[in-house]
Length: 511
Image (cartoon, rainbow, N blue to C red; front, top):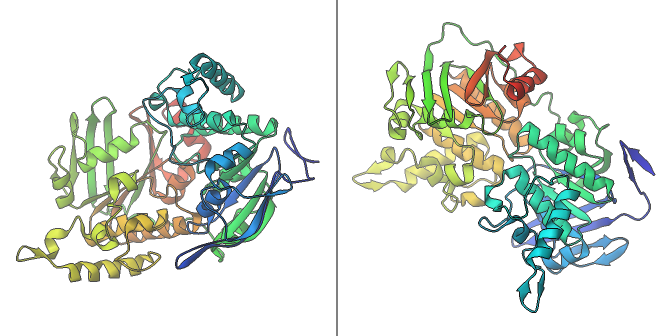
């Protein structure tokens, strides 16, 4: 037996064992030899850059894809899941980052969706309610009502419902894909509490995350994928060094995730000046200045008002009070057009739904905010669009190359680079970044950090919103902490630490 905290993990027959897994698609081999095993009652963390094969592996294990080579063993027996239903009957369930719950239906309806409790065609709602209540109690959430519309729950509670649905089929292995991506620190702690309860009951969890600090906190063992292959497996989560994990994922040594900061010139002009900004009860009294070449970070919990501040500065929300000035010129309230013309650019939090035309080519996503400059006698010069876009994607190392590619097919990190390329094309003076590295692997994350610092070095004023406190402190020159719509702290990033920021966002005590 191997001890980890209060958990004990059997080392006899693994619950799940994967050997030599290969999966091919037309023109590409997504998995080229994956090996790893999961023990009952453990949290096995799966790491790798975007494109390393994690998503394909999840789909093979959950029955959405059939492997071309290799074997999957369940409790020592070779199995082949023909579809997700077969996998769930066996005890394997995947909980994806984009939850597939049905808003408008109750919690209990979602828990038993697809395997409803019924007798002679009539749904046994009382029994479904009772079993749902028992599952929620098991997960430590008696506060969630089985009758509640699932669409009215917080994201954290929706994840609990997804876990309850998996357990309703007697789930023995839960695969969780980036479960903390949209959670604030409090909600992450609750999630980890639920995971620990499940593993104490013998349920195994495959946990996928780009946040290495989470891996160390919640994980037992780690498997690393690169280019569709297993490059390391069975690493002890609390003992493996961060530098080693980064090296395994990227194939290169990274001295530091964050680039070195250069001092901001105190005589540099204030490019962005925000005074007394307020918006429909979301936030109020916000003052913010950003000098040319400065990176300012906004730290705060989800729902604190930090994203709404960026959206209001950009003109996507109309303020109820306050002013926004760029280069000394006051912007018209609630006008995105005026903001863009003044040199403002926004990379939104939800890049897929708000920042990208997913079924359009890379070049069109880059030029969409600059089409007027490509117009010739009323017609767009497609050739010029492609040429300028190609120069930018080459400079930003967007992979795979080719501006004709549809954006939907790119990884999260490369999609983010496309959004950044759009504003580079416009040569914006102020860049607003909302969660710029959400869902982005550590290698691409480092590249994006370098790009942000390079832009600042060229005189661009940058504002970054992030749920990752380490990211805010490592990237920004100056930090504003936002709680419940109020700025409760402002100061240099190197004069505050992570624990103090967390204290401020949780308690709101002004420094």
